[in-house]
Image (cartoon, rainbow, N blue to C red):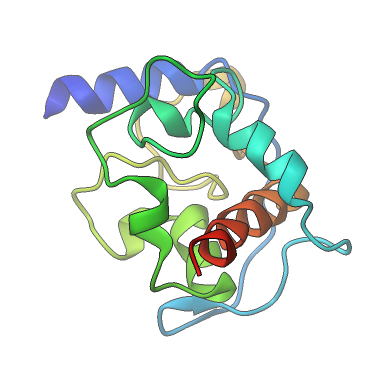
Length: 147
């Protein structure tokens, strides 16, 4: 388990990081969008499939036939988001440890109280607000395709 944390932490060093403003968490959701523009599912798919940006396929698998190697450490993306709405997805992407303290999923939009962060990335987030909204739009589009 410790090896997985170290691997995920080491890979985060390669990501494009930014600073996160505070979010209003209500129960299991973050209702307010993290950006002024709606999410774009096409950009979101690119982020999710990227081995440099989102790194989602390191742990998850999904509808990416062009990607040979997909993760098996976490649920398949369609299954893991099937019961969640946009606000619930946002809260989990922002900081999954809020729901499972033992998760290996990184906090994509949290910049404080993190461990094993390289000094040059301290105080920054992995994805910015617009990128989070794009990922949410893509994940929600998976629900619509399965209906």
